[in-house]
Length: 207
Image (cartoon, one colour):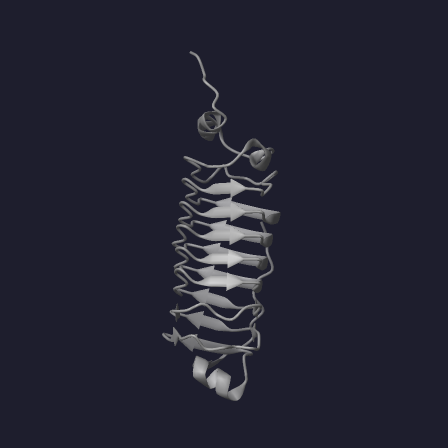
């Protein structure tokens, strides 16, 4: 699936402290830095984050537009009412990361360790999940529009109050999926995955 990539023309290398001091959050690149619990009031636009460790949750309702996160650590961080527009998460740690009431549009999430990732009451549109470990991740009451899971591990994932109709899971692992018929009605799977869904529906196949 084609998504709109981040629009970044150039970047200036800086630190989070300098960004706050200068009140400038546009066209910046931050490398090997710890993001401490600083209170950002402005949105980030056209920024690149390389090897950043987020050690505390940010204040609510920030927006990241046209941003790229490379090898960043978001483990166990909570994002509430954030917006991610034309962003990329590449080889990031998203273990236990909690996205609540967030909006994602034209976002790539690739090669990430994202066990126990949580999406709650989120709007997800034009999202590419590529080669991620999404074991035990959860999707609660989310609105979906054009998602693509390509070679992802979705073992023991939970889908509740979220309609996945039309979404292709055929190249991903869906063993032990926890959901109900309403959520998965109309999904696309391969022939080998059908056995897992038969177990989910408590159907016994007699040979």
